[in-house]
Image (cartoon, rainbow, N blue to C red; front, side, top):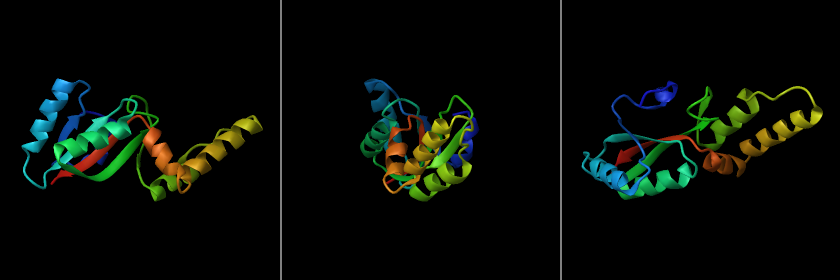
Length: 140
């Protein structure tokens, strides 16, 4: 999997983009089930509903989630990989994210959205809605 986001993927991990169709998905699950116990796997998905799809895929392949990163805004444009946890989201949305200047409504709106995304429940919603993600999992 080439890309600027490879920094999140351990070098020893088996890399895989979650397939979109049923046959390819079954083949990928079979491939991952054949890995040795404890093997690292890096999964990538950049389609809507990736949160649900990655969890379903992990369960069917016999993997345990270790880390999850969301790409903001996405893999195809320059952006950020943010670990999907409350502290990382709070730091990103309060310290790193650029808040626009100009019309006060845009500034207030962006600031409010950042605060909501950094909040107790907001980070979970923001992480679930992000379409592009990388999941690091381990074979159990």
